[in-house]
Each structure stands twice: as C-alpha cells, then as structure tokens.
Image 1 (tube, rainbow, N blue to C red):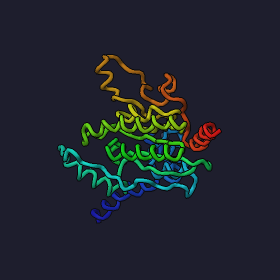
Image 2: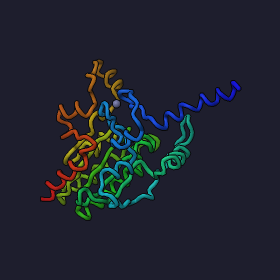
Image 3: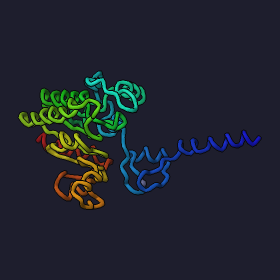
Image 4: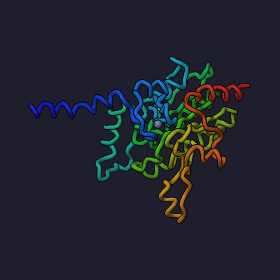
Length: 276
Ligand SMILES: [Zn+2]
C-alpha cells in the first residue's frame, strides 16, 4: 500500500503547477487564469512576464486583422555548427517542433485601432529570441513591406542577442536590419521599437535602439554586455537598477515606459500623430 500512496503524493505538485503560476520576481502564487487575464503581468508586483509572439499579436492588433508574411523562412546552418550539446541543426529542429515556429520572429500586417501597420514580433522561446540570418531576413522583408506600402512599422524585441551558431552571418544581420529601418525615413514611414524583457546583445545594439520612438515595458532587462562582464572590465560596481527600462529612461536612452495594458492605445496614439 505504501508504494501506491507514495506515487499519489508525487503527482500532487503537477496538479498545483496546473493551477498556479509563481511570479519569478515576488515569488507569490497567482492563479493561472488571473495571470493570463492580466496579460501575463503579476497583479501583486507588476512584473511583466514573457509573451509568445502570437500572444503579443493577439493583445496588440485588432481581432482578426493579422496576416502573417514570410512565415516559411527558417534558420540556415552555414557553418554546419556543432557544440558540446549537439548540432545546431538538431537544436533548430527540436525548437521548431516544440514552439511551432520557424524562426525567432513572426512578421505580418494588421491593424491597431483601425490603423494599418506592419509588425515584427520576436519570440524568446525560439533559441532565446536570437538574431539569426532568418530572423534578420524576416525583419528586413517586413520593413521593405512597410516601405513599399507606406505603412508604419513596429518591432517588438525579446532577444538574448546574436545567434552565435551562425557566426559572422549572424552579426551581419545587425547592419542589414538597421539599413532596412533607416530607409523608412525616406518615405516618412514611422518606425516604433518596443523593447521587452530581455532585449540584449546584438539586438539592443542594432534595430531595437534606433526607432523614431523607443518604448519599453516596465522592468525589462535592456543592455549590450552582461553586468558581470562590465563590472570585471571597468572594475567598478554598477547600480542595482542598471540595464533596466527605468534606468534607461532616466538616462535618455528610451522615450517612454508603457504598461502592457496601455501599450495598444499608446501605439495607436503615436501612430495617429504621424498620420496627421
Ligand atoms: Zn510578482
């Protein structure tokens, strides 16, 4: 009998995890349903949890208006890269299977409060939202789409930086994407960059920081190199809030911090200003 009761006891935590979500910041338990209804923001401490690309699209664009473009673009493996954990190819296959995504960004068109836009939304679940050549290609093609049709372009970033499995080709995406969004200015097409947690490395060092308007979600980690690397280099202790949205706003690197529940209306307000 003891064996059976033991098995039962082991099952319980799974059930608990099904109902509760533990906030990574304040550690309080929140009903999964409440967490979801609150747009994955902790009702106790306002921690902004990560969203998948499609969840983000769902809360940002008007219902039923999203049309995906270039969804067939997948990562390339120019170096036939293999590390201690296996091949890049196998990792990509497993990630595609797990997330149902082909790359770390989803691009398309839609409407925000009736205003037509082109969006690129990064998904951190896909290899840490890393910037691979497929990601760069999709971001560039979406900005070309915005250029051709004179539609505002919005990128939601969530990324650990360049995808080192693709070597120099990954780093080249920084220049390529920046060239794409810079061209929008010729046609007076606005480009809004929304930085979410985390936006670091090569993404923060390229398109994420060059929007006509740069907006961040509260408490997002935004920076280039990690805290320890910088501290070891400059031999100084950094402030506690270093590399957060709040710190960046105070020092003039971003234009605004917007709560997730207000993001859609804020974007619409900015776009209506450009439309005048
Ligand atoms: Zn919390």
